[in-house]
Length: 367
Image (cartoon, rainbow, N blue to C red; front, top):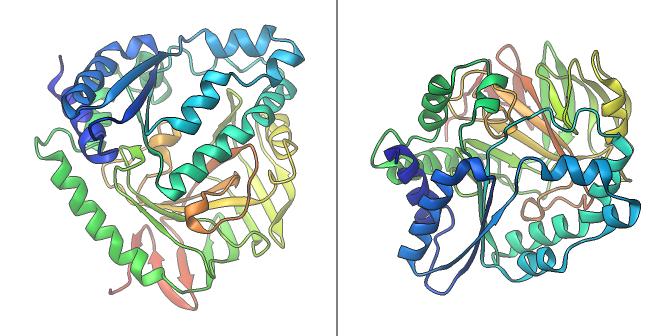
């Protein structure tokens, strides 16, 4: 077994989710991630937890969304409900064999399924916010992910494990140092109000009054590296032209431009697959409002890979998420989607209450 896979398993179980004796640990992933699933399973056993593996084969989502009737699309499995209500830990391993499998599935069917599972999503977020559910998601390098990133599999593995700092046997200590470094940024932002993001591709104003920035350093996503919050929902005004594409329902949507008035998207366009963007915005009442503002901080993630686990953490970028907020930030948007979209900010700045916080891809505050 690749030593880097073993190190990832140790980080996820002993640092990210801190599995304890007696914990019910749900491990979910695709069969092609068998190597990592086995490593995590063994590590959970060593920690005294009760692991349960749920396999999601690559054909499952496509088959369900393509052939399921309306009643089936609306059905939420009692076993899924139970794991969201009762499990102590969720560990998700993403390992696609075809990242474009849903491209030709009707948008309306994807929306319907998103609405049906929205209560589970909200339950998950609420339990996470209150601390009764610990969770983390990571990626197992696959040929499909490598192809999207325009790398060989070997190159992609080096990129993935380098971003996770697991080339170092002391990966946990490395992530603890990242956490301490990012905490000074979060502390500086505490109690502040007006954020102004300005650059070649954005001119946005929003409020963070009463909201909390989260410091993410390998506890929820792995690899990690961002700070984020939920903006005051009706405070967002201005426009943004996203540098990088979003993958919406299996479709790559490029050239996205959004205009906000009093928090709501009032104008939206894209240069490719615009209909997927408009479908997303019509999912439910909260889909035109922001649930997240995040700033990427990971210097080892220095290229776009068409995978949001990495792309939202590119140093020199910020990202916005349409839809649901994370309750621990103070965000109020409780709806079925959470769609991140990334914008470069290497030629722009962020000011907070008139003070420069970030300029040309790096933080400039003294704290």
